[in-house]
Length: 429
Image: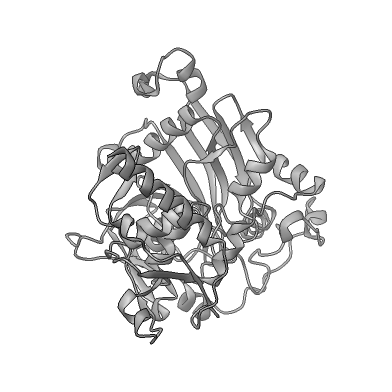
């Protein structure tokens, strides 16, 4: 048994080494070819335990590409960008590529092909940060204790690495926000690339585990939180929308599902009428009107009780009928009907914020208000209330013994980005 395990481990290591060796094939002009599945890979080795589980495409990619973020690997399969050369086809030298799903079982000799664009992930993208970039990232920190790190994420910066992403917030934080810790801060939830506001990261393995459970249980127990004033986790977003909801406040309960568009090149989320479908996800959002303007815009406070991808954007556009300003993915038609966005300028003490400002990572936080012809996404995580994890972990032996309902609350607030602040000034002029 031990001999078999050793042989399989050697084969695995050998496969990982082969991954870095360039082997010219007719299909490699646009594809990155993984080593062929070996006979010893028909069983998987995990934690030194032998298993007869067959090797799936997902397992083989993860095994051969440990440097790729797991989220990126899943996205490649989800967008149907992974191909396979079956062993029988290779022997016939026909070199035909076919799509492969994550759960498809592989045979000995099969080769998996990934887009060449994932090669960018083989070289660390965070190893060379300038002092200006490091200082900028550190100015985003709005709270820090021994357990967590909280940033006011700027719009336009992706949270996690992926295809053609050179700088992601998690990689940059790992290089510049350790503050003497041996471990880098870890993501525990996500914000869309063009969304801004509060982003929480765990500073230790224990605190990250606790935070993961908080965000996960928030979604699974969302129905129990309806109507409650006190919840373990509360998130409040501010959004500027086109039009105004029929009611000043309410509850949106609409299941979401994912559809693939553009021949598998992208996907989008939509409302699913039949919530019994396997692919649908229950989604709940509370909303209330903060302010309305004479120009037809409305500021909403959105409180998601679940944490689904693009939940707030889809609920606003497809249920409330008020797409978020700058959301051209789900509100393109509404923006076309709305026309141009030329509005009177507001002269105030923030005039200097309108000047061109060169920020690290190619960011510009001043452009994109509704005073301009092409406004940016107006969605910002303004406030978050969660348990004081650092305090809770000081008096317990393990994360599983924490009673978070008895822990002191930690209230976090993040300022609006300059362009959203300007839109607020314009609509309340």
